[in-house]
Image (tube, rainbow, N blue to C red):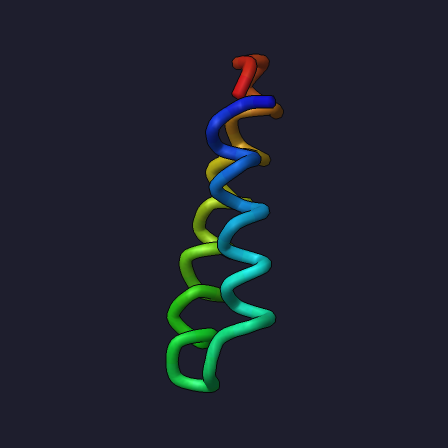
Length: 47
């Protein structure tokens, strides 16, 4: 499993289990990671 997807899964778990202030930051990081992953897939690179 690629490292980026492992990080995304960890961020989802922490965001769901974390507090409100922490989860907002984690959701922002998750969104950035997903955007990077989508662009990487669209450009033909393996993530």
